[in-house]
Amino acid sequence: MGGLRARAAAARPGRTAPLLAGAGLAALLAWSWHGTAVDLPGLFGGEGMRQVATYVAGLFPPDLSARTWRDAAAGAVETFAISLIGSLLAVGLGLPLSLLATRTLLYRGILFEGRRPGPGARTARVALYAAGKALLNLLRTIPEIVWALIFVFMVGLGPFPGVLALGFHTGGVLGKLFGEVLEDVDPAPLEALQATGASRFGILVYGVLPQALPQFVSYALYRWEVNIRAAAMLGFVGAGGLGQRIHIAISLFQEHQLLTLILAIYAIVTLVDALSAYLRARLV
Amino acid sequence: MLSVERLVKRYPTGDAALRGVDLEVPAGQVMALIGPSGAGKSTLLRCVNRLVEPTAGRVRLEGEDLTALGAAALRRARRRMGMIFQEFALVERLSVMENVLSGRLGYVGFWRSWFRRFPPADVEEAFRLLDRVELAESCDKRADALSGGQRQRVGIARALLQNPRILLVDEPTASLDPKTSRQIMRLICELCRERGLAAIINMHDVALARLFVERVVGLRQGAIVYDGPPDGLTPEVLTTIYGAEDWSEARRRGGADEEEEEEPEVDEQRLAGLT
Ligand SMILES: Nc1ncnc2c1ncn2[C@@H]1O[C@H](COP(=O)(O)OP(=O)(O)O)[C@@H](O)[C@H]1O
Ligand SMILES: [Mg+2]
Image (cartoon, rainbow over all chains, first blue to last red; front, side, top):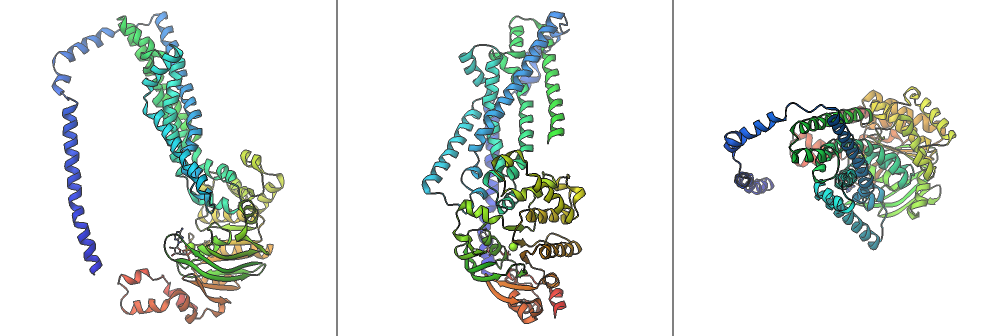
């Protein structure tokens, strides 16, 4: 009884906590609204809206001349290639790095049950984990567009810096996600394999990977869908593809070509979404 | 063949789960380990193949001291002990066949594991076992497409493919319906007899244990309180194992107090049926 009363008393201050949190959240929201200078009349009424409407009307009709067609098609193929190779590079970078970002592969959990590594060995492994995590965070924190600027500076204009930019940023994202997948696999079958006398490698191949691979594929496909959009934008800083052509078209006031290029982006994004959905249904 | 001597297990959190257990299992003997939930049955099994590291005491299998083995020797020793789990512990996304073959992982090397290629003899034996547990047609199905009873039979085939000397069986029927439970228990016991295997079968279902085994060991709070034939499980003995005294006390008082929730559950009708 006394225990119950004590528990009830302990719970009472808890009731004010959600209120405080709610008030704090509201304040944050108000401050952000103010800070971002939200101006709805400015968005929908006024001169700006009319100007945009005039500009959009000026884009029509799209330029369907053979030359522009060829340019748009070449740009679309390049953007597609950047997104595909960039995403593959991301998997190539993220997969090995994810192994470093997985505690259950480095120093704890079923694979290390009953093994008592020396304090030195354990510290080294924890440090490896921390380093892996830090590297992935760095890759991920720097946006694609900044990576693109860096690589354009390093290797010059064209699709290659775009590939590198996508690979580095997305590699960081996938590395983190893959690591989380690896840590979250069901431990029961791993234990069963351990009980058969399987080596750690055997447990990895037969227990961990079959559980993790479908999710790896799913995440990689999703990031490919993200990357086709990103690839189209990277051209603005000189990293090839449709974006680069769009940038030129805007600068030279070639409105009708611009519309053709925008339609090409729309087509290529739709195509990749469909491909990704198809592969997901087949593979996952 | 298996001998457990003064085995103690103390988890980092909390009290001793095993307080000096002595147990001898001769070759070919199928015995049941019964006791209330939390008595330490799973801990005892897991200390035998060292999925859980014992705190003190010895475990010998065919004379070999398992508690003294290094990592590589322990893996070799584990091949001689097949384990069967309550929740089956299959790799759900792999086929039935691959799950069974994974029982050979302790025997094959790096490259065979990597390419998932097992020697033809292993594959043939796996087919024979699947046939024996009546799953031959399902061998290409994914494990998650099977019913509970079928999954447990995959688990049994996986354990047997190790070619073990003893089976460690942890509540094999606790996730199954009563009829399937009996079928699974019968299958395990038949297979042990066919192959001359010893087995320790953890269970909380006393009636089921009485039907199938020749020896019952009762565990309570980490200590053995009964060791004998199933016929010796008198109401007094069951009271010692399950603490039914407290439980009947609880019944008189209506059984709604907080304290009694901590007490082990006893199936009233089962106990009644045993007298
Ligand atoms: N991994 C663990 N960590 C800490 N305590 C545990 C762990 N596993 C079991 N225990 C404790 O050890 C005791 C025996 O548990 P267990 O062997 O699972 O009993 P049973 O299988 O008979 O139900 C229980 O008190 C349980 O809470
Ligand atoms: Mg248990």
